[in-house]
Amino acid sequence: MTSEVSAVAGGGTDGGPALRPVAVNLLGVVEHPVLDSPYRVDLDGRSYVPVGDGGIVLGLELGDSVFGLAADHAAPGACLVHPDPEARLALASYACIGNRVRVRTGRAAGAHGVVLGKRGEEGRVIVGLRQADLARMRPADEVAVLACGQGLRPPGLPPDVTIMNLDPAVLDRLPIRLPRARDGAAVTVGVRMIVPSRLAGNGIGRPAVGWDLDLQLPPPGPGAAESAAPGDLPPGDLVLGDLVAVTDVDARYNMGYRRGWVTVGVVGHGASPLPGHGPGMTPILTGPAGSLRTVPDAAGHVGLTAAAVQLQ
Image 1 (cartoon, one colour):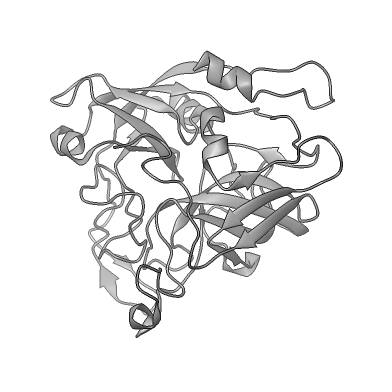
Image 2 (cartoon, rainbow, N blue to C red):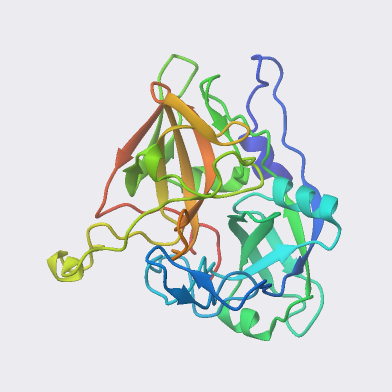
């Protein structure tokens, strides 16, 4: 980990000496789903049971459609929390996409995985593991997280662009191109789609380092799958691990509207019938649109994959 961090550490925010992000050992506990009612109410006033919201979700992986399950906010793996509220906040704030995790207790003890994203609602960390390991896990299992990445500023990053929630070792495995030097050029990011800020839902006003941003997106329309070329994603579809850009959102601190800015995130959980909710992305980049250029590719985009985070 140390050599990987040093390789991309870069300079300080004022152009001073290079600053290396610190790694911290954390402890998370696999949560049990919690309900205050057996039902929630969807956009059309129909009641539904919110299966898949938290806990350990089986059979869902990076690359699966966010609209493919009869579920609510389903994430590909296990959600970690901590019984102490302040420790839970630290866990959610320090953990970054790509951080390595290891199961410490239970039948899956010794299994290794990786952080895939975050959830809101008091702070949850989504960790992916092999399906066989997830099947052996139970709520209350302890999981160690090697957290590293907050404060990362690699060489060439424009001073008005912020990186967050991303392990330094994963940066060059994503479709993110940094300028070679501080020459005024923009960061270029390949994304599945660009979404206007009016579709941003739950997460607005929340801290970007410990929360996700739900996108109020509809599923692909009837016949979308048939209209797609063989091997291509249907128009309007989105998969877990995709990078998505949201215009006019500033996510440096608490996420909110700011004209002319753009925020890029990694999709970490599936859709939700709940009004104001939807597929959720964990912010990884934010800045003025002139310094952070996003290039949409609806058919050929490749974001965070199991191979990229060595989750195979």
